Image (cartoon, rainbow, N blue to C red; front, side, top):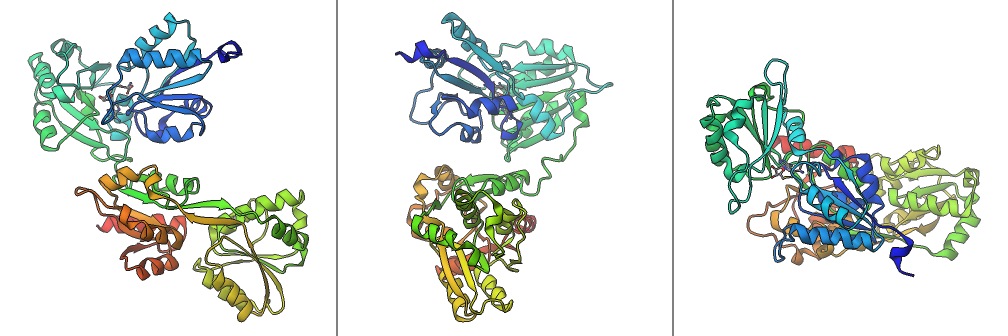
Length: 514
Ligand code: SAH
């Protein structure tokens, strides 16, 4: 049977907000997470695409090098056809779909073909730029109206449609979209229309993004200063008395890592906490997974270990990933947490120990400096290992030292249970590899020796373009530093403590000094 007969498709015209992915609505997120087709252009943050199901079809209808720009008719045609195939289509539009978003044209095309649609509003650029740049748009005494106007960004295109001279009489606050290529003309007309040269004005480019730039200047100086400071689209131009009350530096601009680009090398899917922590400090995060982690399931071994689970006196976890995989396997084998038995738990670091907190399981030992070596030493120092049964849960790397020390010095009887496998991931496949190569980064963070080794092995592929920033190599802890240095790489920064908190603090201190 034809899909169309089973299912009626629908199009959601969804506001993607101005750039910061956190400014999207709950409704928009819900729709992205469940769509069959995602249609987007460059104004919608690429991070939003990550929420779409992996089998969702992604269609880029924006400008991109080497491909012609789709015109509005072609875009509308795609929306209609996909919905007629019975699919749930999300059309992401920057900011709000109804504010200079050509949404009306898409609506008409859908109406004409009888395709159902819904519209989800978004935070429009003028409001978001004002909030993130500390520019009040209204004030009881200085500004009682707010106007949204459009200039035109494409120099080749038609002349200004808005009668700017007339708008100088309107007063209040003017928010001008798409005005950068005609800035001089717009300012000239506003002044010709009667606005004084000392009227407060501002430009905010790339608002809400880590690369946001703000210019506060009197209207008469705006063009010259914008040129001097190289202000580029996308930007909003603000004019009005309330702009005079703007903060020179805002909460957003004070973020300690604002404007810093930081590449993360952990396996994809692993680093959302690290990403959100760095992003909330203002950094732009590049995804450069250099390792991939897969569960390693030796069913026979797992069955044996779980059959004798009550016989272990210590279970040792060398990574959070190992702890999580172990708990998954545990609950596959047992339905009751009491089957865990009386064993004591030792963890390499706080984030590993956190896994057990969720189950209200007490962790008896957490290594002080978060390395496998110190964990082994501290375990030996408990004097509880002689002839004790110990289970070491780990990945496929770096467990030898641990086992050697526990067996050799501690005289324990050690079983190992590998629960995951770490392999190198192809850097060329990394989501942000092209940007990393082209623009570089301020820092690249190596969270483990395996990420460092993968970097070394693939270094021939990682050649920066001439204008790219050279990142400092940032290591998560002593072991990773050792691996980098053994491979003749200079470590620019080692985290003061191998934890997310330690990493963030070290990066803040480092960049505050530089
Ligand atoms: N529908 C969008 C506007 C689309 S028109 C909205 O509601 O925001 C595109 C223009 O929006 C750009 O030329 C620029 O003027 C403005 N714009 C979009 N994102 C912006 C951003 N992050 N910072 C500054 N201006 C932005």
